[in-house]
Length: 292
Ligand code: FAD
Image (cartoon, rainbow, N blue to C red):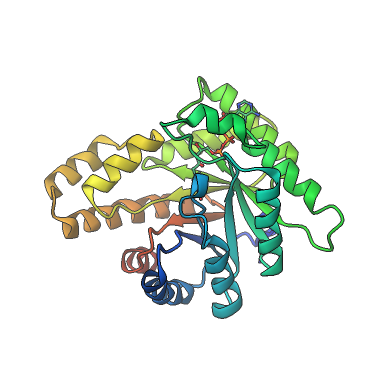
């Protein structure tokens, strides 16, 4: 399948995607292969592989996505960040993706680093993800097959954006440039997602908006990630995580219960799919999915 199929999915079919990050070295890749085999048993539509902004964690994105597609036989997607990259570098990556017969791309700008961020942003060929989407659509013009493109959406607004209005109008630029679906940043309160879909529709965007969920693995991790991306931790969840303290086994249980409740409500509301930020782990995801 590819991302564009979300639009025509059968009413009762829920499309699941998993997001993993590439390994740092060969031994880590061997471990990831076991994880991927277990994730594939859960029958996801797609497994996506992140791409570190600015050279970090970039090297093995295509290799892992190719392994998922061509060895395991599950559809995959490469994330592609553009911050600080030249057109030539982006084209090289697109050529690799094409060569491995990967049809899906998650097109992103990438986070601006604290050090030298503005300089890097101005040196790259693209300042925003809409320009990357435009470039991909130009690149593939003469090619026999088109990519399916997902772009990022932010139910609690992107952290740099002064207002929701501006953020949604920037989302519209990515859609107009040729995106097929929107995958959201993680959130712990479904209300943000439902309100966001209303705002997206009010802006005339009719693409599927896939909710992104990240089951908690530790209290520390959730506080760090949430503050980086501006995600609110609801009071009840915060309290349960405080009670779990540094005991990660307890925190995982809190995370499973939280995510399971979110999934149940999202399914009841008829979402087209769910994207899980699995952080290269499986057992928590298996438990969430077996009980919804
Ligand atoms: P943009 O769409 O460019 O938006 C960034 C900011 O600029 C927003 O505030 C927006 O409102 C504004 N903006 C957008 N377009 C314009 C414009 N034309 N003019 C003026 N302002 C504009 N990061 C990684 O490094 N690697 C990954 O693999 C990765 N995967 C992700 C997957 C998902 C599903 C999500 C939700 C995020 C992911 N991220 C990843 C994080 C992402 O790179 C950051 O959130 C980043 O800060 C913004 O990326 P973007 O593509 O949304 O950028």
